[in-house]
Length: 102
Image 1 (cartoon, rainbow, N blue to C red):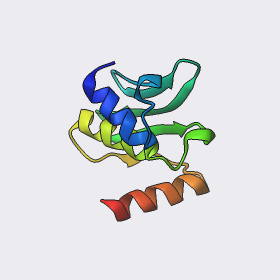
Image 2: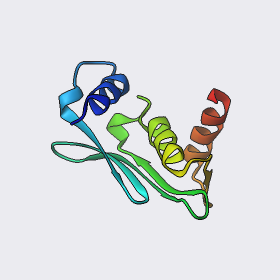
Image 3: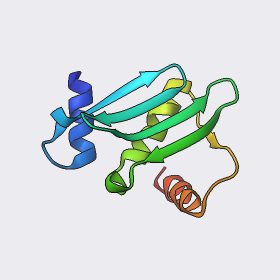
Image 4: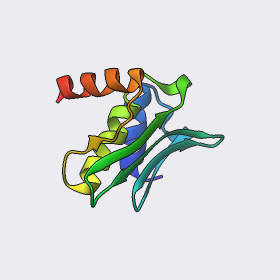
């Protein structure tokens, strides 16, 4: 894992568990994993400038992982992304909070 990945993971957990998390970037996908499972992922479309799907494992929610997934996806696209419909009630709350924090 890169130094940036370690710092990011430390930030996400608020603890010194950086070696247990990693972030992978694919063409249109950002994925957080640990040695056992996928912790979160975001699929996006650069061409359409949309966030197609975002997921954070329930045990890892409310730690900044979703926000980081969106920010990293936007960084890779070079623009703000709009979530695609339908958006769950929990997703609506997430995006409202994300907009307030911008």
